[in-house]
Structures are given as structure tokens and as C-alpha cells.
Image (cartoon, rainbow, N blue to C red):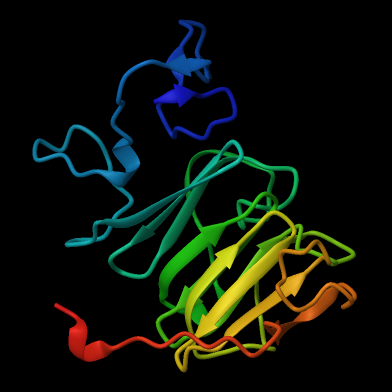
Amino acid sequence: WGEASGGALGVPLIDTGKGNGISPMMVGSPSLIQALSFSSSGSFQSILQPNEFTKQVSLGPQSTFITTSHGRCFSFGTSEDGLLGIGKSRSLNPTIIEFPQNESIESLTIGAKHALAKSTTGAVHAWGRLPLAQSVASKPRTFSSISCVSTLCAGYDSSAFVTVTGTVLTCGERSGRLGQGEQIPDSKMPGQLLGGLRLWRNRTADF
């Protein structure tokens, strides 16, 4: 539900009676996204595989992203910055995001103009108008300068990562958000925080 003119809600087009449809401007109550749901009566077609379900929902500017239990990602909406990750600027219906080597995706994070995804192997993929990049990446690219990532976050003009060993890395435009010291230039490659901050996780405390 919400403002729907950009296609970010993935709801069916309104029939105009003229053989075409238009996207609704506003949806005031929860509306079923049929392509990402199952119908016991078979009244509509789902793009999900058997026993596949939505695991994560992420929202971007005029766009929505779905990660499923099978490690697949879908996007829909509008973005002139390549944020959809599907090679085009608009999709009214959920469209699968194709990753290198068909990697299974565990989680993704959406920034203002770029997105990051972590595969089940700890590899990182990025797309959109990446900070400091000269061009838009309309489809995912492997972030080869970093691996074994546990957590990641895409920000406005920067990105942050936590590795499986607890090391915190950042990259992007010098804005005070990198945490690498005020004198550093823009950072295209992930670097450690000033002082080498490391996060630790006590796995014995998990329950």
C-alpha cells in the first residue's frame, strides 16, 4: 500500500476498458502481490517455486526488493540510477535480479542510489549508481575487493561491511561517515575504521 505511480507496489494495472491498463496512483490498504503469492484455487499465477517464500523485503526510492528462501531476488518499481538491478529503469511486475554465477543471495541492502547483496558464500555484489563510480551499473557486479562478509549496509554515498572476523570496513565519499579519519580522501576500496575497530560476536550466547 502507499504511493504507487512508480510501480513500487507491484499491484495489478487498472483496467480502462480500452484493452489496456494503467498503474494506480495510490493504494490505501494492503493489496496482495499475486506474483509473489500462492493461490490454492489456482486463480492467479505465482513466479515463486514450490516451497519458496519471501524472506526479506527491502524498500528503495520508488522501488521494492524481495529476497526469497531459495536465495533469489526480485525487484519492481522505477529507478534512473540502475537500482532495480535488472538492466532497465522500470518494471511494474516483480522481475528476477540475475547475479554472476547464479549465486544464492542471503541478504541485500538498499541505499539512496546503490544496492549491495551478500551471497551464501560471503561474496558481495553491487549495482546502481555506486559511490565514486563513473557510470551506472544496471546489473549486479561482484565486489572483488572484499569477501567473507557477515553484514553489509548501503548508505547515501558510502557502504559499510562487517567481515566474519568482526573487522569493520567502509568505502565511498569522504563525508565523515566513513569513520576512517577526517583527513582521508574519497575511498573507492573498503578500508578499516580509524583505530581498527573490530566487532566480536559471542556465539555461545545465541539462543
